[in-house]
Length: 217
Ligand code: SAH
Image (cartoon, rainbow, N blue to C red; front, side, top):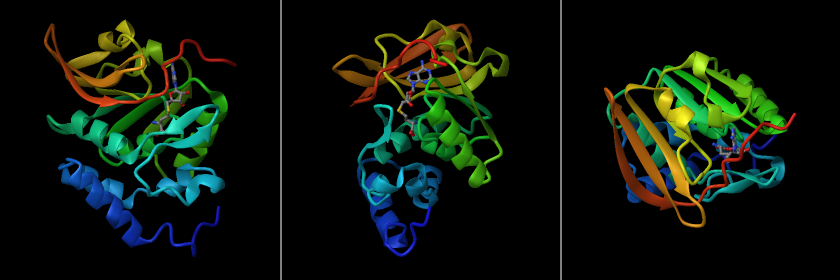
């Protein structure tokens, strides 16, 4: 895709977005730095790419969206709030943008997507960006990815009324799970495992597409 020359990738446009993220409360400098350099336009279809550095969610087809940059930054910051992560599970690869952001900040990312065409496109993008520490597969993320766990971070990019039990079960000691919970009204929930205890916090209100069961062929 040729997107140079239209100004959307300009450093100034990205600078403005990062300033906005900071103003909205994102304080983790590593997260801000990755957001500054992340080529969000490459995770969108050409028709949408000119809006890549606006702080809005954008359609990626199949009735799904690439999350708002503020949400991506916020969830990533929450994931990293108690130190670096080695093994992170993401549910809802979508465009692959959040996967990309995570790959720059943690050791290894595993990501599950239920819509095959989205998954294939995301994989292609990550490969062309030479991201080698992210593994993406087609499947039902409600089941997690048990043979790659336990995970010291789990980030879910789609909302459900309850946190799937399989995901809680794949959380390592000290692991942090972040997920939007609710129906029409949703909030980010944070679960931190400490030994056999699970601390539960309800944070910002958000809006996500639904977490759906199964993975159509
Ligand atoms: N992080 C993505 C956001 C995609 S929107 C991005 O940055 O682009 C949420 C994604 O979750 C959609 O692609 C949707 O297909 C996927 N999804 C919904 N339910 C799922 C499930 N049970 N397992 C895996 N992916 C799921």
